[in-house]
Image 1: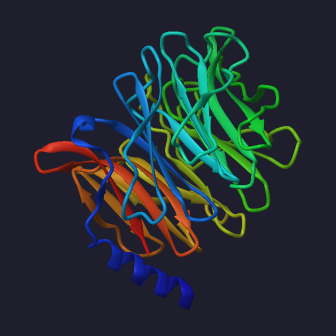
Image 2: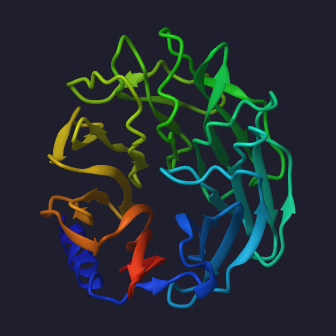
Length: 353
């Protein structure tokens, strides 16, 4: 408890630091940043502008490298949580992105910290089946990488995944995580994937069952099949359409699952000890990571990016901020988001200590 309290003091103090701008003037209006942190503390951020995917990196979170173009895709899937993803394992940086034009799941790897990139194989086994553009990527930092996405199957969408044990150089076969008995999962909400310190994999997606679109999660131990999908929360959301809001998923250092998600206009949390806890009655786009043992949650509300650390009250983190990505560390967390600098739109970074 004492460690958690001290950590919260450090995190609160860090909120007053000046955020780092990640993009050069010509890349203003770039969107959908995502980040990964290596085991040595190196930070990697990817984002998109137009049809191009870019990468920038930092050793300390104070100065970032000039953005390098990773690749370009016709009709790059970008916006509303679509966009490139990044993972780091044993010095290998992996970037993934999807094209609306060919409907395929593209990959690139770099062995020189992002200075140069090599395009790899397409991850969807059936050509054109990943065109919705919704996917998630996670790594344990030691080679175990999992990617999950919404895939077209038999007239609907189902959640599928692939696994790599060498950081993304090679991949196992495509597998089904979940197929809805109603014919399709919710097609336009981003899935989430997380790997625990013990190697357990969790995948979260918004389901579509009998007119309800609620968040579900499934787990896998080792090479075993995924467990049946488990609904999060006590209530249900009857909606004809897609809210385009998939929530966030993380494991604590002890391997305990924690999820944040939206139902109607409210944002909730769910953990291994409770089914749901109301976080905000008017909010959207929540994400979560663990700073040590403390969950750090961000969401959008009233045009601002809000933050809640552990049991502390929520506070404004970034005025006008949206579409945050967060990765936890032993003594803090890294956050990137779409924000503003002066009168222009930009991408910002903050490392909380």
